[in-house]
Length: 232
Length: 404
Ligand SMILES: Nc1ncnc2c1ncn2[C@@H]1O[C@H](COP(=O)(O)OP(=O)(O)OP(=O)(O)O)[C@@H](O)[C@H]1O
Ligand SMILES: [Mg+2]
Image (cartoon, rainbow over all chains, first blue to last red; front, side, top):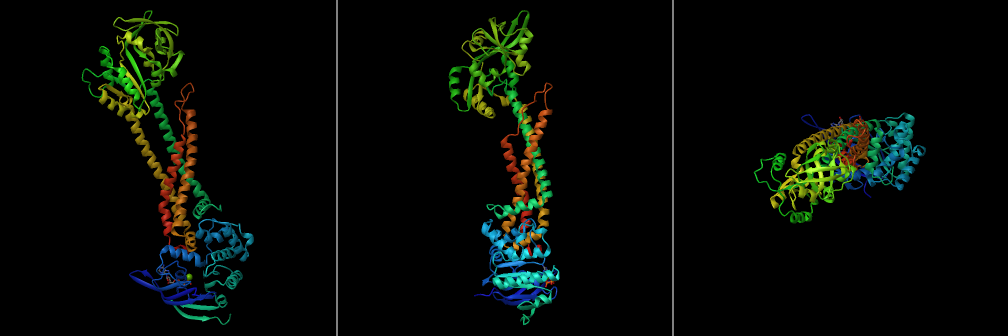
């Protein structure tokens, strides 16, 4: 089976003043099914930029990017959007729920935009996912009325709605206190073990990175180290 | 979430409901605009219908007259009438045959031959100048609703009967059942019995018009077997002028349409219509700007949410439609509110605009069609106004929006 993720020579540069600035200088990276990897590095090293490329929110300036075996650089916009919706889940630092909807409806949202209309199966799946993140009793709460930790749990449930092959999390615990951060991290780990979903998690917290299977370190747009985590 | 609603509808209505204050304000704004348009349109069409009705209460859509013997100065329908009265009355040639042809024409509803001419009404010492009008009542009332205007007695013009206006009755001190002598100038005289009184809503007509049977008028006016003109009622009264020109070409008769005889009135109507269209356009424009500005703000406020929707796989098209729908919904709800407001204004207006004796000046309603047009128009304006903000929302770069 193809790797969940296969990057070859990924470059990203942004126009800046007269010339261009290179943010990523040729990234090669593979991620296998079920891997639980941390992406660490100093601020400004390009972690979020890389995650956005992998998440198909942005396009690389050069290089090959395969998701689940599909080469993406030649795909048109509409196909990219569909691929993103179906194969990739996002968890952001700022939970980014949609405040006009309830917790349950937020979890349903990826299914809703994919199929176009709500149905009972969608609702059942979202209910099950909410229960899985321990929020069964908050299903009908407006998203904006939940605590930060609860919102992040809803966001995780939402990221899993389409049974994506890969979940990308950009500092998912960056906004939470230590205790809540530990809970959220444990939840990601549990989903990974139970569903076999691959995770790529950006974090600044060495304690959390230490709990991943693999640690990838990015400095100045280059991978300077990529090692399995012996501690785990 | 209703199971049968597509994502775009659900998102559009939720977004509008969440931004409650903004949504309400703009819906009220649209409502006021629509109310102005609906009220104004209803008022104008009521006014117009009323004026047309008054004009046509004593006038046929089209009148056919014998050809002029002297060249008629241009555009002087009224003057020509005066000149004609000074001449000896002439009949329309072979009017019976013409009548048969006219009755077969699909655009003509009614053909009413009339023998009319100047005469005097004499009663005691009083001697009044009148227009003696000989009619076939069954035909005539379908052109001019004389039967609706009878205020005393009945519309009966058999031999020896005469129907006169309330004003003439007052001047002569005569009533239903009284005798009236009619003197047609050339010595022909007849004594008739007043069988009915009418009120055409026009003082001159009430004083001058005197109705008798067609035969009675023919013999009094020395027009035996002839008619002085033919009144026509049309299915489409606004087609009168075109038909008049055609009939003039085909028959050589003088054909006067009510449109030409009331040219000034029509010029006024047209300029009124133009100015109300200008007002409509600018109200529509300001409604569009209002909706657009609210949606532009909403797109900025929701940039992150739009970004996350895009990250979750929502297409540009779905985002675009979500915002177009918001514009459409605001337009539709605003127009319904506006129609309700207009109905309220109209009922107020009805209470205020009354004659001294408490009768409404004229009848105005908000027609159903106008409400539908306003709803459709406002919805369309809403969608068009939403176009720019919706395209912005669809074009948002999710990376930028989420980082925002
Ligand atoms: N749209 C852009 N235009 C220009 N430069 C950009 C753009 N996005 C990112 N950069 C630059 O790319 C570099 C990497 O940014 P990125 O956000 O990927 O860093 P990061 O590793 O996620 O940092 P942090 O840990 O602070 O989140 C930074 O120098 C940033 O200024
Ligand atoms: Mg970052």
